[in-house]
Image 1 (tube, rainbow, N blue to C red):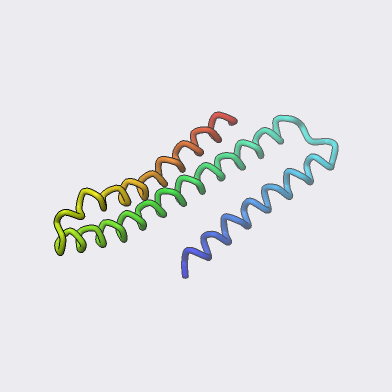
Image 2: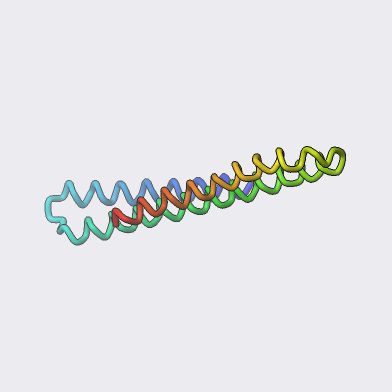
Length: 108
């Protein structure tokens, strides 16, 4: 129940930041430094959301898949090496999120 609240909070912050940026740009009196601050805050928020989402998702996937792999290995030990590929795929989710975050941070 708390995860949807957090997602709504993050989405609300993103909408408020975007509307503030549009308001500043439409006012005509906005300085470029103000817009750069909003851009940096928006990119920082995006990096944080991507890292949190990918790491939590990868952790959940590894926990579920790891438990299933160990259960299968207890019954049939020869399945262990083949089943570890699925754990590595789940761990790749965190690596992909980290790579995307690094690319976004380079735009700051």
